[in-house]
Image (cartoon, rainbow, N blue to C red; front, side, top):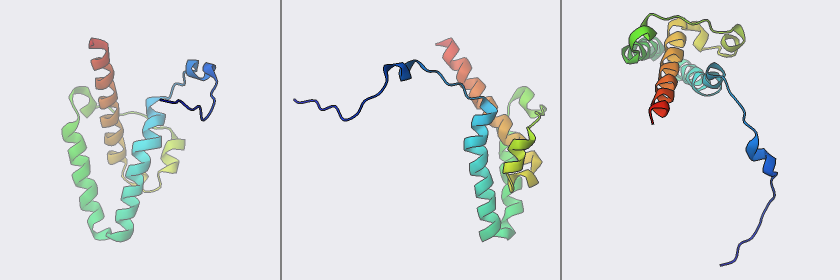
Length: 114
């Protein structure tokens, strides 16, 4: 078997650690996708938008556990400003972030137990 080297990388690249804050990561992934989905529904089927948002918000509330149900977090204005469709539904925005954070903390505590 022959091995071919197709590129090079710096060994020191493996040593670099980059930390991403949970709220920043949520904004890059989940919130942008949810914002796009709301915009798409608003464009294609505006008559379904209110029903969709209220049912999705109820699902998030259902999935929230313990103190997450009553907790409110401050969301930076620079994050809210980018979410042109989602910022019209602050409860959905708040509950989606709380659910995401709940999942992240649960995942971290599972890693600690192992």
